[in-house]
Length: 318
Length: 305
Image (tube, rainbow over all chains, first blue to last red; front, side, top):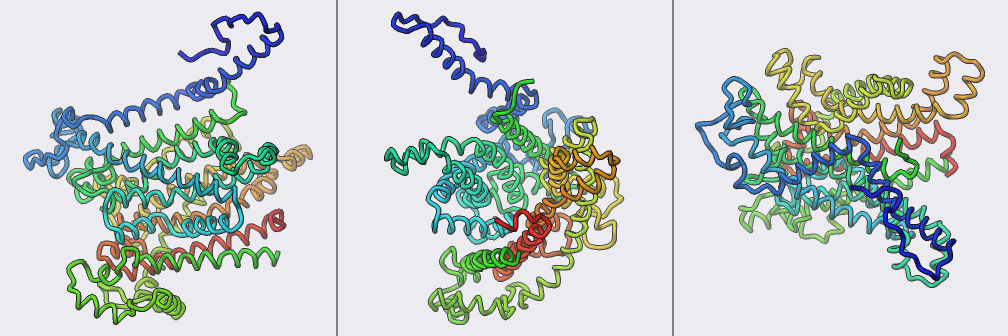
């Protein structure tokens, strides 16, 4: 249960406090208890946000789903059971609820099995790009000067090259592999985070308490960590959430073209790519994973918007 | 105004320079461009001969300088599979891609702008909610998947449209719709936000207080001002159109630059890849420059930054 605005436990009475002091403390405690809770309540007050959270939880569970529990072995090739359609269609069966692909592999099992690789790439790429983006953005905004100019130029150069073309070229040159893929997916997202962090840092730098800290002798590190960074987090949080969606879409596109995650590992994009040559006899091979990708991206976008609304200081519960 | 233009152009030069650096080093990222070009199985003598022939044993800076000189003379190397100069191969395919991209852009504008305006003017009505829902779906569906879905519905099941290739209107519909979808969602969102912004501004209130008819208010004041930032968005989306053309052209076998790039990837045709990156980026940078200058012309406020 979420705590309500009014604390239910009576405060311990301290005989040395005056009534006024006790009242002030009381007010502060009410306020401190409710900031996070209020934001969470605003977030969950919209049913779309709740559904998105539930959906993403299901996705996460799929990622950790043990292989033994899957209805079929996702890698088992079965020439006898090729191209079985969805279970409600003619020729379908309930053993293979979402049908099989051209090699006889169960689509539902592959769908669940693929989540772990997509998710692994997404989370790793997001972590690396966010961390490096925050670091470079803070450095560029805080220190300014030559460092700022260099970082800005790097960002501009990277934004000038279309992401897909850049990703494809790098994948070909560097070769396939999980780490290469993660690094390449980072590049596109890194620059956006750097930009936002840099502009937030620049505006926070003008606040008076930064100057006050400097006058008190605070080191640069302390200023950045304790004062600038907390103010920069809130727009970043939304960007990071939405970034997961764009990374998923880029990774799917790369796997679809055949240069993302390589077999025997599979991702949803790869499944769509597999089915591309069989659209006439078995269109569901490509259609089903695409629905999964769309729903996931939709959930992530709703989550991102929900977080943005919840963090907006002007939002009230209606 | 002129100072702003000069400033912007000066800012662009290091970016162009950086892109050429990237394109140059792309082939040298793994250390040995000769091995990259000739494959892992090539014997050492062949590699050494290749290195001599292309001056790969010279210092890196002089190689780079030679690269830049070649670029300025229009020499972008020889395509390995085709054994022909790269630039004419690319230039042949550019109009093909432009044909597709401009149709996609046109669809995006023609559908996107009125929808966005409508959505803003009738804010929170049923239509607005439906439009916003469709926009969310449009942004969630991957581009390549939408293309495949269209093929499944219209080519496989209904058999009224061809699966791909270049040709008349029937060949053009599905690829351009696929390419324009993301653009439409962006334009609708942006136009809606811009119009909402302008609708609540003072001069609109003045116009209404003057007693002007709503339609005149809409067209003469709201639209003109709301559409100015749209040019920036559209300019920036040119980069997106390039990326989108890669996927869409591959799915629909549309013989443009995008498909050529993907073919180059799988045949490991590195000179072509290098050139594509260079030229695409240069086009994007120049378009961004033009958009910025146009924007400063239309919105005098930012000239004094």
